[in-house]
Amino acid sequence: MQRGERLRAGCLKLWRVLDGLVALGILLPDGRRQIVCLSTPGDVVCPVSTQAVGDMWVEALTPSELEEIDLSAQHQNIGRDPGLTAALFSMVHQQVKCASAHLVTLGRLDGMERVCLFLADMAWRVGQDTPGGRRVHLPLNREDIADYLGLNAETVSRIFSRVKKAKLAIFLSPTDYLVTDMTALERRAPIGPTHRPTAAEDDAERQF
Image (cartoon, rainbow, N blue to C red; front, side):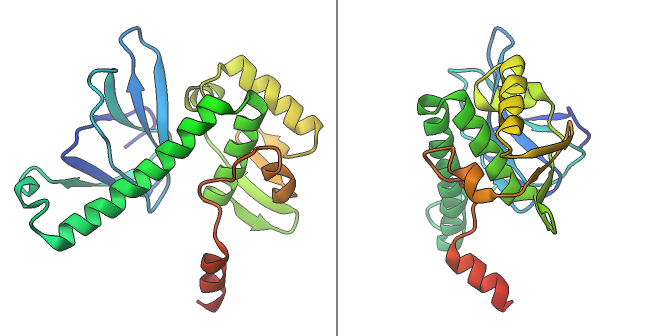
């Protein structure tokens, strides 16, 4: 998929992200959109129908490669096949976990907290360790970020300026930033990034 391409989401189709950055979004009848989830390589996009709210779709925010999993022919086996049921439960559980955290972000965090949490979360998800800190290439425009954080593009730009002034991140270009102190960035939000590695995951990675 190229940037901007969309797939109509439904409950009997899942998508595993192999490469790129993919959004799960809802388009309201008046044309406004809300990005409810961002997925990176290794994630499984597991939509839940929201026809009462608006059309749900899967959109590539960058050139992306997805593997489609169509359950139409197997839906009668859900609940009968233990392996299939366990796999689906794990996928749905992860989706609900991320959605719940995002609901708290939109409902209780102010703009600065939302942006700092977003920058920290994406740093863990797609950032690379460098001698100067954790560098992130984030090819989302301000409108994409605004639609994810429930803000407007102008507010996102103003908060980015505040983040830069507070030296919480160094913006190298409109799509690249460097985090020199992850702890300081995370401290600006009352909840931690959903995708921050746990101590156990860090130990396992070092052993590997």
